Image (cartoon, rainbow, N blue to C red; front, side, top):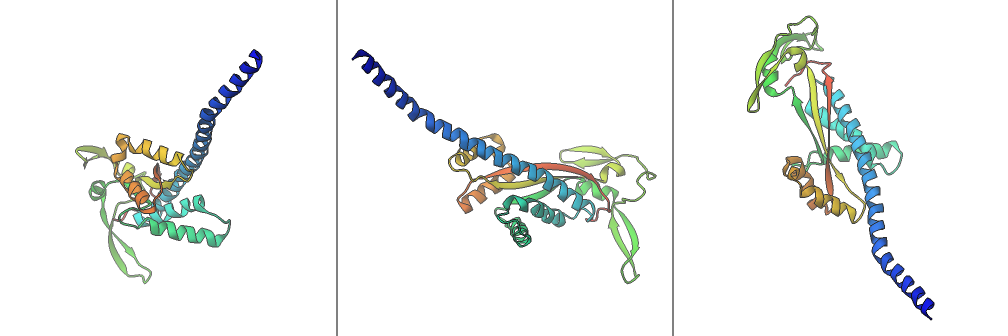
Length: 237
């Protein structure tokens, strides 16, 4: 009888421990799955930002062209069917989502060169258009950098100043931002609330993702990446 009593007690304690253990294991499993999705999103974002920077280097640092390329490079993350038509639809819809004023899903910030740096180095240059008519345009020189003057200029940057030459001014540095929707239930709310409680949640990009979360009744986490490339065309702003 005593052995039977001990056996029933052991079974009872196992059931009680299981009641606590299974929810914890479930949350850990869901958390691992969601972190795997986040890692994939960050890897895609790194590549997309690099692609956007390359696009900017051949389009005179045109921000609209870079944002379009960012949307195109992020499209594979949202594909449901491996078809070309699906890819085109996703690219178009994501680029349109980047243009929503209140809550853009993504954006590109040009870190360098700044407008002040561009103004310091811009020059008026003449060229022939397609009709062989002479045109005058202001741009930052990009040709023959190896023989151009490497003297530095002092330029205002924020609250301070920066010393920079023409060669370094032709390095395009951008930061890409994206609001990634977390889809794994329960843990998406926990991760969102945890990050939202940190000091960095006051960042403007965080506010955009928060607005997007409220609009779509979902949980979006900001993902960012940086890239630096040398300009292949002169900057024209």
